[in-house]
Length: 246
Image (spheres, rainbow, N blue to C red):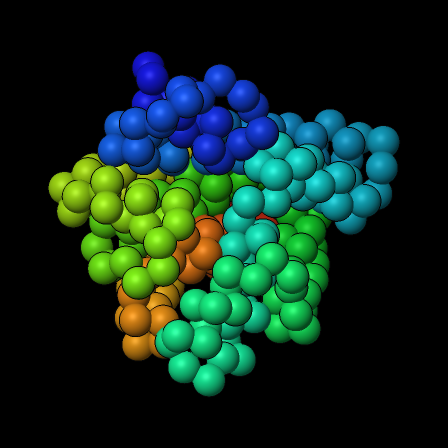
């Protein structure tokens, strides 16, 4: 279970990972950890919605997720967005290394938080299935990218994970993510898998062209985007009277 402990330590603020984590063994557990995070976020929303307006309850739930993960993926999204204004791959990688967020990064963060909060507020009790599915699939998508797109000449933790993830391990992780998401969210989730796959593929091609390869920040940004790809359509289904859960 060392791989699971390392995955929990990397993806959340929960301590317990090894001093020298086993990267290759930890990545298949990413969807499992994502499922747990999504279940916690969904639980916070449903519990809070009993005594608070839906939008406020959703804001608290999204905040709980951010606190649980230490804003790991939000930071990656902001760094990636800031790099979009770069003059070339070298300049983009330099911007990604800068811990200070610029205008693009702040706008991306605000939009992500607003869209997630708004979507969650419309899920009602289906949040207990939709959120675990979204978090599991989005973590699986990030691992698939790490295993299929060459890393940029960037270094850092993202490159270490990319080097440790083989295509076979990435494929297994993707299958695990789909199985977990379908079990949590129901058969409707399979429709979202196609959208997640499309966004993941497009992000990989964009990273190669814009940055010369994949970085950990791009993988984290894809987690955020693919989570939205699940949450927003699910909220639309609920709003139009369709069920998104068993």
